[in-house]
Length: 633
Image 1 (cartoon, rainbow, N blue to C red):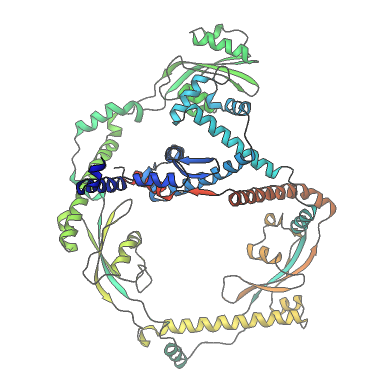
Image 2 (image 1 turned 90 degrees about the vertical axis):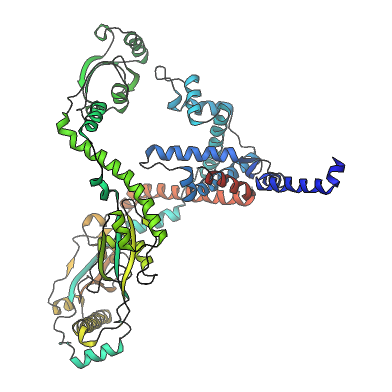
């Protein structure tokens, strides 16, 4: 070996081996070892997690998500949308807390772990309610855990709970903070207001033609119309090919026969015996009798013994419904003993009465449509490949549409947002907004890329380009006149309302006199309100906000959304809460503040732990894990 490595050939072989090890990621293993992390991707103190731990956590998160999701998420999708990084960050924060706890010697006892495991209903025997070792192993196997890994998980959860509860133990909001909150939410206010038409009696501000022209000349850039383009849009969806597929009556009949009991029949009715007992022992004894085929009417000691016939939707108890009507349940299926409203209930399924089946003639159109759509979807996939080939070959939009037998829609000139000169928008262009955006970056006649949406595929092309320009004065004189008039009205209204507020605030005109002068009435609340009950008084939102953000005696104006119309508001009174009111809301506010302080303390604890416990990571190992996901075909 020594002679071999000293030779030129041996050195070449050694270089090939080293390069090969680097190519296959072996160098990352040595990097991890040199970093002091062993096989861990991240480590804090004595706690860490490795490639397998992270993968197990990812599997668990995805499994839980997909149980309730209509569209299951794969590992590849989780990597693409950043979920893997989120799980990695969560696990890193978790081991940081656990590493800190280990450095303090915080660890739950074996008895605590056992009691926590016993309390999990999924591991309990349905007859005895006790921990079932066989059931425990089965459930853990389904979840991909060994018993040791599960016990470690429970121990870690208890450790974190202990540290968090220690941080928030005996937390109570200081009286000074509680009193401030009580004063804030308990103070009562009353306000007065009236509506003021600031343009009432205002002089005519209609501009002359010369004034409109002058406004036009000084606002040329503001009046410029954006560049607009005529857009041709190719639309392709599975719907386009439904007419090209063939579905025979025999195929419809075959599917009907295979699925009619599940899809085209009314819900079945089931008869079951339901017995209730005062204690679990009597219920367990009855369960044994019924499970052995005994006659329900012969069971003694039952508080009630009822024979029921119903459909699944008529059974409100979810557990009973699953036991009697769940998938695959047949005569003899058992339920219980289960405690319901202080009694122990046992049930046995007696018989199943299938629901009426709808005739083929009634559902044939449904089956025909489903088959046609499935086949159209397959044809749609083939057409997608043909579309890509046509795009790669450089065909124009008309040629592509002709070969694929799909429509091309032509739209009037629109701006980059899809709006025409007259302010019209097209729903189809909104759906194809990505294609539209790219069309505005290309030259006339050039085709965009293929853009896919959940329902269709779009390819766009620019038919013609209308450059940005300011229309001639004669074309938009009416619009410019309206714009100038609107500006003048807005300025006049603002000046009038400002003058009114100044007069009232200076004391030269009273609030009531100002309302009378405006030929309107002053309104006020029938009684003061607090922040706690103001929303129940039906007070308009803007008034509600202003009354609690305005100083006593100050007058403010609130726009109403109608040009020139304002609400003029004044805070009449601010009263602190009475002792009885303070007592009424004090306990609730104090508890809420204590809870908020507890959450702040937990966050502060996590911050201190992150500072005190150094987290060591190996990004190369994390990248290798991500690469293992992205390489999955």
